[in-house]
Length: 334
Ligand SMILES: [Mn+2]
Image 1 (cartoon, helix red, strand yellow):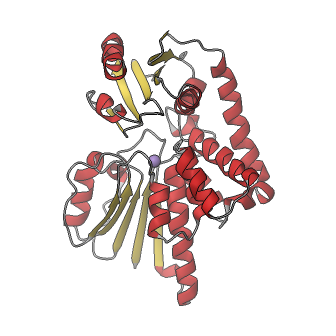
Image 2 (tube, helix red, strand yellow):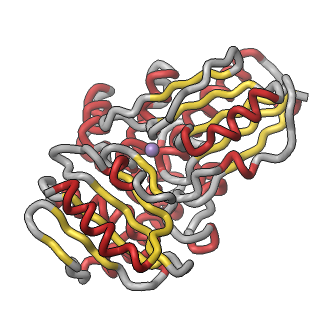
Image 3 (cartoon, helix red, strand yellow):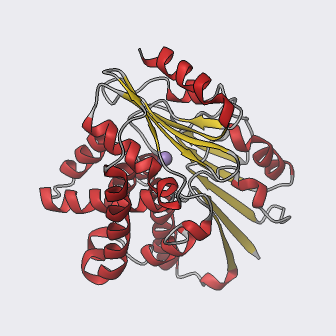
């Protein structure tokens, strides 16, 4: 039996990438009149910060297995990919994080681009020749790529209010992926994907799944309200560091709060620091929007750091290293 395993980041970009691919697969199967039962299908995802998802793959191997991987760094998963290829699986890899050296293998297909103006959903939109652009727009807004998202929306003739709806949805799905563990999220990303993939156009959700949209958005707004009273730990024109209190909402909101500050202060770099419940800090770094550079390089200096040029993070910074982090952060952006 043929087996498909989809591995995707639990944020909006990961979810919206797989939605496009699955809608395309379903359409193809319909066209070919094939029977879907002959394919076993498995999802592997997690919280946004859980990027070493290939470690969770079961021991299924062989020629009949196709593994698709979306929106997680190849560099952080290279051992898993090599293992899959060695055992005969076909691998499709689409991402926009730092990949390291991309292996050459007849069974490996990669679409990897690290430009600060692309995300995985947009790469998939190109790969599928614009089959489900509304979902790509949701994913791009989720990754705070407002300009490319608006450009694509304009190119397919969406109105301003439709574009805004997709923006609200993207931000709220992105927000949902942040949290210290699956239990702390409002929706398990796998369940959210399954609810959303029923819709070829996310604009239909606003009428037909109003309760899910309402829940995603109101949770986001509630946590952002909690964050709005927080003053910076240290700030000047170039850099600001925010320390969030040791509460679950603070971990959930850290990424979208960082995006929101980046949008408000486009000339300033931001670091959002929250306690991670493991005796250390979790940090989200946002480069200045006007010059999206260096966040990945900064965070990769720490063993649990990674990310993209414009947005990156550290999963576990020992408490005593915070001053050192702030020093390096200031050096990078002053
Ligand atoms: Mn992404």
